[in-house]
Amino acid sequence: MQAIESMIFSDPLTEIGLTNYFQAMKFADASYRMQIKSAATPTLSATLGRTRKQALRADWEDVKDSVMFDAVLAKFSQHDNLTALLLATGNATLVEHTANDA
Image 1: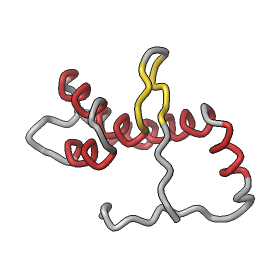
Image 2: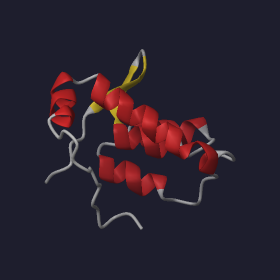
Image 3: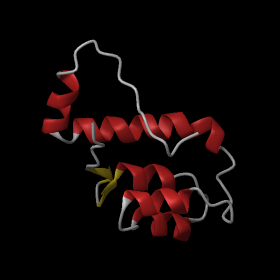
Image 4: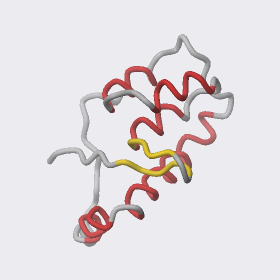
């Protein structure tokens, strides 16, 4: 099974990938968030997002689940083909499988 990376609108003017958005939202510094949002690939944004040379948002542990929820909701509500793909899973349990996360 392959990952599906689709662009989302994080605000009315900004179209970015979900991974870029989530990784960028970890940080308080606006210029670093913009660097992550504009990263050329999800892998690069994830690498930038894993740095600890930049300070994380003070509330990151409290908001990270809602940030991901909002991003996934945007992804599936903004792309009819992905909505259909998700609905076609029925009652199946969906689990992310990646060697990159702990």
